[in-house]
Length: 204
Image 1: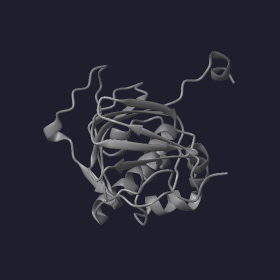
Image 2 (image 1 turned 180 degrees about the vertical axis):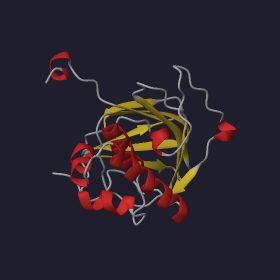
Image 3 (image 1 turned 45 degrees about the horizontal axis):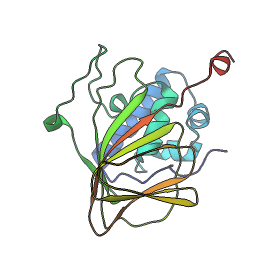
Image 4 (image 1 turned 90 degrees about the vertical axis):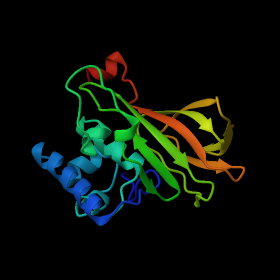
C-alpha cells in the first residue's frame, strides 16, 4: 500500500517554486496519459499526496521526487527543470547548481541527467540542529560519502557512524534516516540509483 506521506524529509521551498514543481509533475503525468492513481501506484506514494504536490500544497521530499522521477523514467534534474543533456556526458558547474534548503537539510543536484542514466548524484548538508526521528524509504539504493562532520545513518533498528572519508551503501527500501552528530553540520555526497533488475525479472 502506498504511504500517505513522503519517504524522506520535506524540502522547504517558496510557494512559486512549489507550484512550478507541482505543475511539472502534473505535466509529465498528463503527457503520459496517467491518472493520479497510476502514478501513485508506480511511485509507491498515495494519490492524495501526489495530488497535493501537483496543487503546490505539499513540500516534496528528496525521496518522493526520486520515486516520482523513477516512476516516470526521467532524471531528478529533469523533474526539477534543470537542462537535461542530450549526450552521454554531462558537466555540471558548481556555481550554476542551486542549493535547496529545508527541514535541516540542504541539497544540490549534480547531474544533468543524460538519457538512460540511472544515478542521481546529490551534494547534501545535514544540519546539526535537524530534528525528527522518522524513518523513510524509497525504491533503489543509496551510497553516501562523507566529506566533513560525523554522519549517523539509521537503517532499520541499526545505527552506523560514518566519518570523513568513509562511505555507506544500503538498500533504500529499508527505513532510514540521516543525522549529524557532534554538534557540527555534515557535508556528504549522496548517489541514489535505481535497483538493477535481474535478467528474468526484466522479461516479466
